[in-house]
Image 1 (cartoon, rainbow, N blue to C red):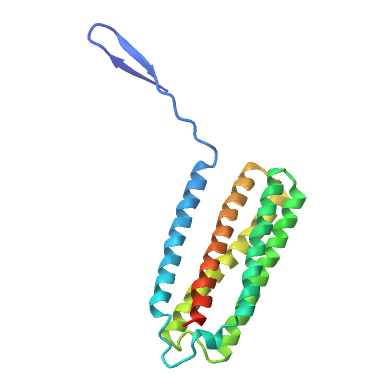
Image 2 (cartoon, rainbow, N blue to C red):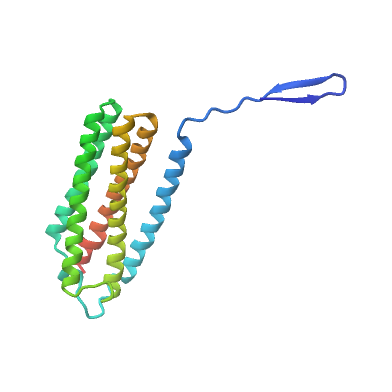
Length: 208
């Protein structure tokens, strides 16, 4: 891109302005990092709310009366395994192996569905026992925190299915690789958040 300037004793002087090169998809990755930071703030507020309200049982059931740590441990294992299998999907994506990438994404999705099924079972059992969100501040904050995480996992599974369709149609083009990378960051982020939920809500809750 050219621009001109003039001097007192000479004619116009021409300058060349070079535009900086930007990596393809750089703005997408930056935007997704900003989204993850906003999600961090949301979960931080939910954890803070649970920390304040988690001990208010209103003469209702306490965590040790409701939580089945064995079942929660199985559920945690499902999500941890899903992060491992997604890692394998990314490794095969880097090697350009479409079929193997799709297979590992499918396994990841199954682990995610297993996680959601166990969580829904836990919610249904608690509600059947009368431990509804309206029962106490503890239960309100519990259902809000754990339910918000479950909604994120649900969104991640829908996103995963969409990407599997895109990969089936267009293979591992650069745009699909970038989208899979964004989903990878999102999925591992949910794994980290759940470790916090398991520790802060379930383990520490049963020790109160």
